[in-house]
Amino acid sequence: MKFDDYIYDLSSPGRTGVDLPEPDVPPTPIPEEFLREDLPLPELSLPQVTRHYLRLSQKNYAVDKGFYPLGSCTMKYNPKVNEWAVRLPGFANIHPLQHPHTVQGAMGLMYELQEMIGEIAGFDAVSLQPAAGAHGELTGVLIMRAAQLARGETQRHKVLVPDSAHGTNPASTSMAGFTAVEIPSDKDGNVHIEALKAALDDEVIGIMITNPNTLGLFESNIVEVCELVHEAGGLVYGDGANLNAIVGIVRPGDLGIDVMHFNLHKTFSTPHGGGGPGSGPVGVTAELAPFLPGPIVALNEAEDAYIWHYPEKSIGRIKSFYGNFGVMVRAYAYIKMHGAEGLRRVSETAVLNANYLQARLLQMGDYPVPYGHRFCKHETVAQGKIAGAEDVRTLDIAKRLIDYDFHPPTIYFPLIVHEALMIEPTETEDKETIDAFLDALDKIADEARENPDLLHEAPHHAPVRRLDEVRAARHPILIRLPSAKAASER
Ligand SMILES: *Cc1c(COP(=O)(O)O)cnc(C)c1O
Image 1 (cartoon, rainbow, N blue to C red):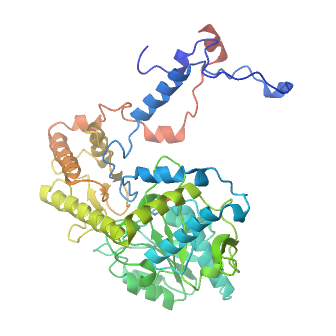
Image 2 (tube, rainbow, N blue to C red):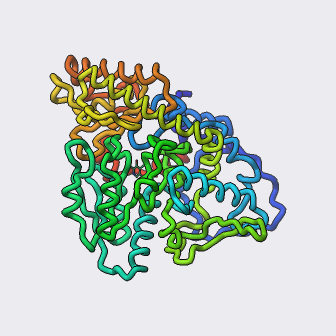
């Protein structure tokens, strides 16, 4: 049997991995229209299935296997104690329709989490409902709009979005039914203040701003940006995806931000990136608290019990039930485990690691760092433009890194950096790992000059070679089943 056997090739008629008991109810005939002949399922034993899936999982790359410097995604190590916590029967076996009286522990955890992340980022109230960062953005834009409509300001319809923003920012704006207006960055990577002033008028709902921004830079004008937007009657939405750089150091609410999402799965450690559940709570100022999506958890002091509460002017429900509870448990465990001082050290170490990486990149000189004249925060953006290897592109460098057993950084984002390589090492990596990654980049630069085709054809050692990503997106083959005839011939 070959290691790479396709699961259908292992199938053998009559082989099974389950042993079902005799039914103790009368059989019900299956309606004809639900029966089909062309759905052959492989017949396999339990060990075959186990090995098949384990082998598949080993072909994948994960942060538990190696360095995963995917910029803006905060692929930090996810402590295993989080997984223990979320599997506790009192958390794992409850149902969202249970009476609050029977789930006070879970509601208490949610209440404390609301309080803790509100405290961390400087907000008065928090809703845990949104399912991810992008969902938090949509929620935040709807909240800003609802607050302005409540003041009778019906004319506002524009949301300002810096050109360095994540694509979800303009997308959330459009999804909420509004118009995104791009604001350029200045030469230091901050929001261009004069361009912002020119764009502000009484049709502006507000600005969506990421701080540190996606260039990995702290917006040095953030206080002025917030003041200008507020003077124009607008509100400030903070994209909190990069919170990992500033926890315990500065609170976005104190800077003038009115509403912000947290990516619990990034900053507060839940495995993510495979399309699994995330969590994107939003925090707001006292002024916006009445508009939060409900229900949120409140404490009824008279009865000393947690209750579900609908804020009085709530924009309504934006997720079934109460959000992705499993992610909340992990984030809670993570925050409690670190404590305030530990969380600050997380951020300090993340920033130190990124600056070490940036300093060595500048020293190496093969990969330009367009904003390298500034200290970065948790990530740095370099360029895959190697002198003497003009036909090698960032994509080739990223693919070659796979041959060195590293997950590539984020590439071609942010859009304002040509041939971008956006590298976020996170705090959980040691110096040896970061050095090994930089050494690989160093070798790749030499290879690019000496043998560019080695890069053009990379990866050479991965389970699959270079994929045609455009064709994969345009013509996805979602399922590959043998025909019934082929299966019966086997
Ligand atoms: C990840 C990210 C988002 C979107 O968050 P999701 O949880 O993936 O929906 C938004 N903005 C920035 C800057 C991000 O890095």
